[in-house]
Amino acid sequence: MPGGRPRAFDPDTALDRALEVFWRQGYEGTSLSDLTTATGINRPSLYAAFGNKEQLFRHALDRYVAGPGAFAAEALEAPTARAVVERLLLGAVELTTGPHTPRGCLSVNSVHACAPDSEPVRQEVIARRMAGEAALRRRFEQAADLPADRDPRVLAQLVHTVTDGIAVQAASGHTREQLCQMADLALRTLFPPSSS
Image 1 (cartoon, rainbow, N blue to C red):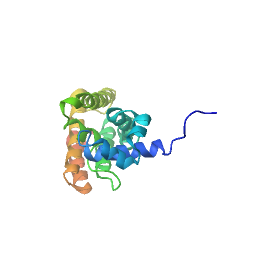
Image 2 (cartoon, one colour):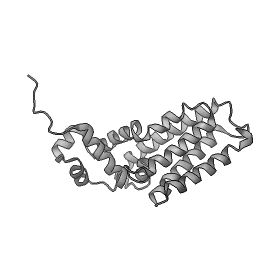
Image 3 (cartoon, rainbow, N blue to C red):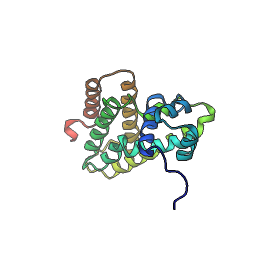
Image 4 (cartoon, rainbow, N blue to C red):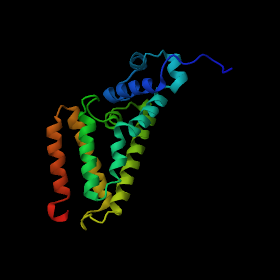
């Protein structure tokens, strides 16, 4: 017979709720009370299922990357550099202005406001972001349509800067339509019609 009592909660649902709280409030702005209220799980059960707050946040980051943020990895499969950038920019707009998700981006919201005690979390987010930027750089290095004057490393950094800016603007209240206009202008600036 299996030992222990079965869980009285669904871990996937609990993780989704914790993700939403972290996404809305950032890591530093989220308390354990916020998490227990959102998940409906008491602290001992939360610790038993996910570990401490930092470990739960890492689980939430994984969930975010595999779920709402999956468009970023999928964009790398686009056939051209221009299409990769277009999917990243429009994906960022959709992610940060969705009707059923918090405004802004989980990693952007979490990396900018961390107390010294939370530095490991900040470094984790930065490392994941750098890995994403490196993957984008490698994709640009393989792109046949990349204009000759574009450095893949600098372009990857610039695209990440623009997608971060989209997240900040979304959190500040810009509309989806406004952000789509910005994304379109950025795309036309980076890939003028003559270089397409």
